[in-house]
Amino acid sequence: QQELDIKAIVDPGFFFADVLRTRFKERGITIEGDAIRSSRSAADTNWRALKASDQRDARIIAVYETLLSDVAWRINKQSQNLFADALCKLQGRAWDLQHGRDVPGSWKAGSEAIHDFLKRMKIDDSKYVLIDGSGMSADNRVTARLISDLLLKMMRHKYAATFRQSLAVSATDGTLDDRMPDLKGMIH
Image 1: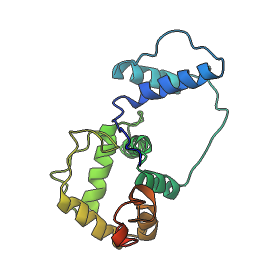
Image 2: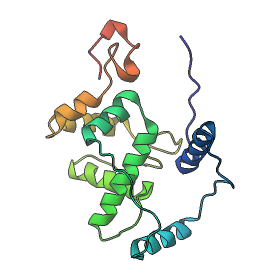
Image 3: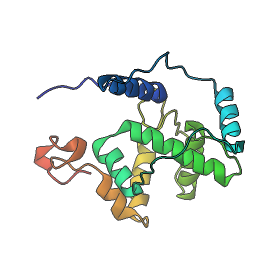
Image 4: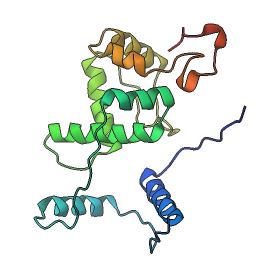
């Protein structure tokens, strides 16, 4: 069995730009110049300018929508960390919009949305720290108690079946496909 060398993606935006450039180059399309990350203040200014402009030089050419249950399945069962990062920022965007702030999604706002959810579920979130949405940052913090409390609450949540179906199952599928064969189907 091949051992994978997994590394955290420190800058998903730059990673995307690099992969896009590589894929374009493979197909004969060259992108001039270097990929650069603008400062947060420049991004916010550009965001506001784009929203205010009547003459946008960009247009939507396609929209793809995926059910949240399918996204959760991919994130949880297959451990798609980039999807988790994006979903966290999407939650943050929705959180900010609910609170009157029309800004791009961020991990900080995603963290606020998750803390709010945990509080509404009456789960102690005092030791929970979210730095990124994937859980790959060494600075993320979560207690075993929080995880067990969350799993118990989700058993009775209105989306309990959807949540449970998104989890990998021992010796059956997802990231647990070849693990714990003696407990096949018993661990989610």
